[in-house]
Image 1 (spheres, protein in one colour):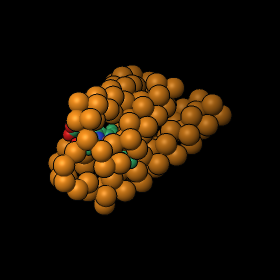
Image 2 (image 1 turned 30 degrees about the vertical axis):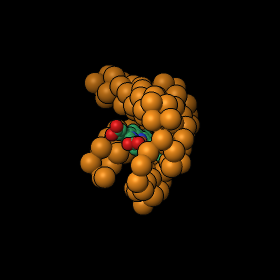
Image 3 (image 1 turned 90 degrees about the vertical axis):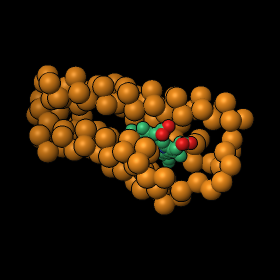
Length: 116
Ligand code: HEM
């Protein structure tokens, strides 16, 4: 069970890598919202929900942290949706929206690593 949980953590990290990697590529490029970001968010979110259940670990899970991460994930999802829509209409996305996606993604990773 413990090994299986570690595999799900690895998948969670792959989701983070895809989302943040796709964002960094755009941050140094055209600053657009891309489909790859949606995929990274979906992978990290799905694996995160599986990790939110108490299996394969000893001790308690930090449900306050998990709740905060879920809210941050939903905000990132909303920003990606709004951004993709605006981009389709106007051809570009507001800088504040674009940068928020990266900052909030990094925030969720920091919460995962630093808040024990
Ligand atoms: C953009 C979204 C997210 C990113 C970038 C992200 C990133 C991370 C990172 C980097 C870790 C550290 C892994 C480690 O210390 O080994 C982590 C751990 C964790 N995340 Fe996320 N996460 C996201 C969303 C979520 C969501 C939505 C949930 C649950 C609803 C969640 C639940 C967890 C849990 C439970 C852990 C601890 C895993 C463990 O130590 O067993 N994450 N996350």
